[in-house]
Image (cartoon, rainbow, N blue to C red):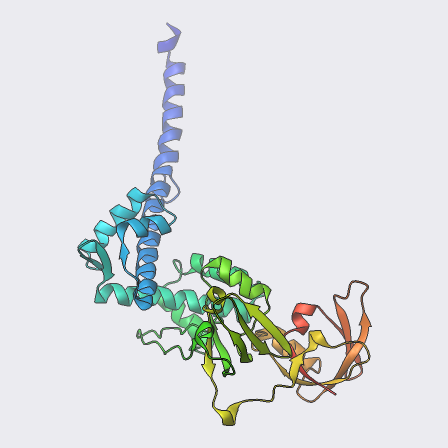
Length: 340
């Protein structure tokens, strides 16, 4: 019969050989790809669990297995399996139904936090990514960088103490600086301070702060604070926030002898025929963008005025040191001026 002919048997053998090769070929075979993906997923889940427990430990919140599976973007079964293995490895422990970090688990968590915050610093200083993208991109990279690569990144960045949101960056020894200041929502009226930290979680609140163009490093004065709203003055503008949003902004109260003049405003507020002098550049402008502005003449004391205005008002061209420079409103809002 044809089904038992040598040609048919050779064809079956050839097909099986291809399938076996595709399944087990070194590194790229389906078997190894699936196995490695499982390992990667376990590593990612382990590190996400450690980081989540660390952040809740700092906030004084208790975590149980139900709240953990609810927040992580993995199957409940995978999370539970990984938690069991982490308990055996003594990275975490149970106290009743409450999960907590062991000393070894806390050290591991700090390494992950270190990578995340260094990568956010890198994105802020060395790339053009928008700040709303920093967190998610750092979430991916925190699982990829080795200890050696992390130390090289820290050296490249000058071993910074804080990330662009104002969060302290752990050292390679696990030491971490204190976060100075208090929540804006807790400050009394007429308090004067400087914004030192903006919490980037949850996303919905961070995006509200981002939309308001509120900057780290800005000096603020509280005008109103009640259960309905928090109003503060900064850089020539009044900002109105819900208390739940204001709670995600940390302000370090300033002593009287270091309080700056309040007659500074943002370049974006300059109107046609108004004259001003550059008073400084916000810390929100970093790296190459900051150096470019300085090279273009945006240095303290330089006279500036509007040269041209587009029909929609954005961007505007500003005349500085004899040169017309076009800036978008969001860029101009990060340059401080003193109007003449």
